[in-house]
Image (cartoon, rainbow, N blue to C red):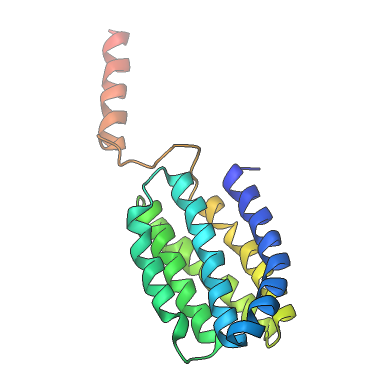
Length: 181
């Protein structure tokens, strides 16, 4: 199992376990709505740090989307709306900041993983912190698929080939034909 996949699975389990006590602890001080948004933001910020580390890019470009989401913590919309906004920020950081190569493949992977993760959470219809904890864990299970759809290695990045593969094959075939003479 690849390291990003394994770490995403472990992170998702830890997030699912930590979200309930954190929301309950904060909700007595700031209210459930703000506590939920802050815990979800914190979870996304920690995951963004992992993504930045795996991609080898600096934290700087990921700070702007995280700051925008932090500003939306006070947004009066419901928990589901903030979750969807967080999903957009996650996609922005993962495919727009960290892993920018192979845009069509990344877009397909984002649609599949973001849609699948959000679909699982919506299917669960979370309304309580416990249901959100299970939903968050299921969400990260689906997010781990991103690294199968857009493969990356430790420090490895995708790069555009410098030469067309057909041109390279033609040249190799000519070399083989010339060696037969």
